[in-house]
Length: 215
Image (cartoon, rainbow, N blue to C red):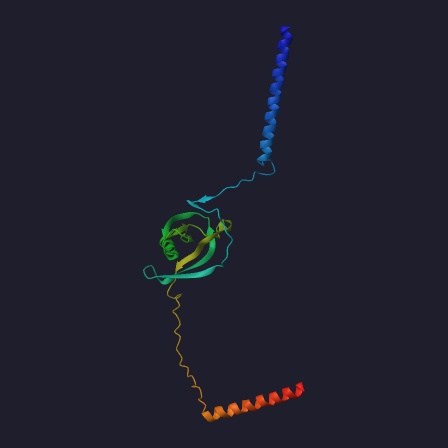
């Protein structure tokens, strides 16, 4: 009798263990499928990206075309600094240095003074900031075009260099011309009287023809 009871208890324990293992297997399968992981389809994860301390998750489509930019600095580049600017884009390449700057001109000058700098990212100041943010990069977009990303209120500059005296173009002097304006002709009283008489005859003829048509 005791052996049969012990056997029954052992079977119940085994059944409970099997049920627990089955429940764990179902739970694992549910979690496995819910996470989206399989050999063919990787899980989808929503996340943000931090790059050198500033958040760059809110990408926006570009709105402005590239343009040619020139600034002037009498100390380092007396004939101006030229660069190719691509607005609403930044390059996520290797960074040399970063700093706060009052304008993009200071950012470009810092790049010229740094021998490792090839291109820069300039971020315009936010509403609560007085200075913008400058990133000096050790490479440009040709090194890895996939690292160019759209970013609102930012400008990517490359091909930064001081212009030479031969490249400097002085502003063209526009010669002023004097235009003579003909003074209006003043009519006499007799001429005004003749015009009024002509208008009176025209109005009288129109009224006469209008009355004839009505009758």
